[in-house]
Image 1 (cartoon, rainbow, N blue to C red):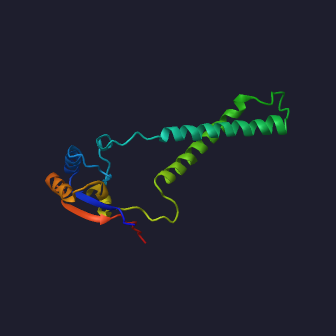
Image 2: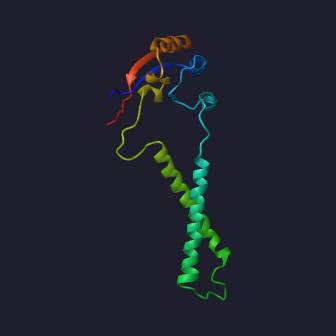
Image 3: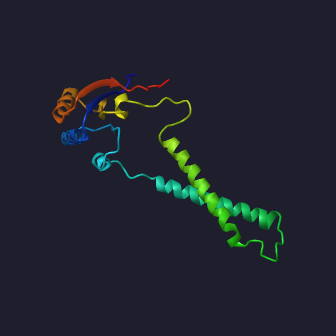
Length: 178
């Protein structure tokens, strides 16, 4: 079984990298991913990245916390051990609002952390997936899947025309910083 190879175009300037993305898309060459040391405005739209579903995950986690809080308080205060406190009803909703709010926020926060770790593959003991180490410091990298294209020299020429400082042909590696 062969390893998937990638063509990496390294750029010094974000504008040149955006020009490289345009050139590749004009020639119908699919881009695997783009790695930048800083956020670049408008790159998601240019690459066709879908909108995040993180808000849906936050809502589901918050509703889970709300239902957990209400069901726990109902079970303890009404069903399991009802107490007469100052003649108030056992299920007085205004008394439950602070705890419900706190559990909603707690479940939402912990759910978002879990979703972040799951989505970004940041599990304990897993080596980070790094294509080019300089992408975190001073280089802007466009990665193209070499198996998806027929002619790699065409991609090399397009990247050079766009202003790539360096072009690498490599296999995907999992780099460990230890």
